Image 1 (cartoon, helix red, strand yellow):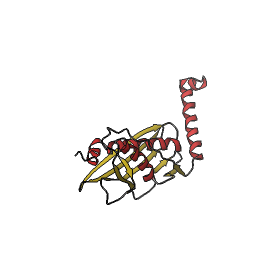
Image 2: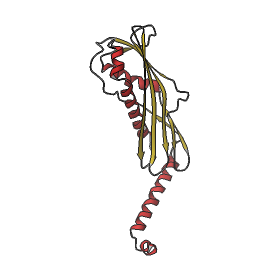
Image 3: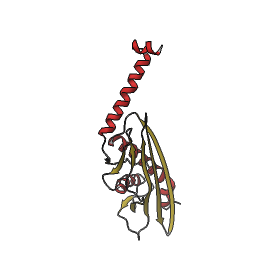
Image 4: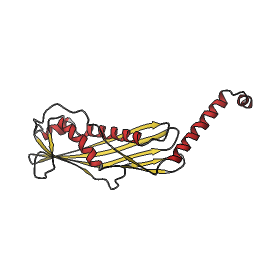
Length: 205
């Protein structure tokens, strides 16, 4: 029955051809892939509010506390592993989005000054993007952020952990990996810069 189906161009043969073409395309794309991807990250600021900061200045900085500055790894069908990196300081990309989110509370982020209050430091504890080869490709992005705030001689600390998963039929290129990582950063910042932290910075705790 299977031989007859193949000879007559039946559904079994069509599925076989489609699978073969897909596998061939994946191998070709993997063979053309570069050994490093450099991403231009630009995460959006999470939505914040209400306006409780009264326009006060906020000494602010973001630091990268990771041991490895790579963003992650991508595995291809042929077994090759691609390094995923940022084309600029990842802390700077996170700081731009976080500063915009703080303005949503009506704070005015300024340069870091360890002697000023209120002040806020965000530390990137983890940012890891892994792509596992398969049909489909599995994408997983993990990010961990820590915020430490000071006001009135008191200190407040909080953390955010976000894991974002996705699937793609073809090996993800720079644009796809950038989109997924940007979204993970935005979600983590939204969890970190919550109303409780904003109230502390505004002196409403």
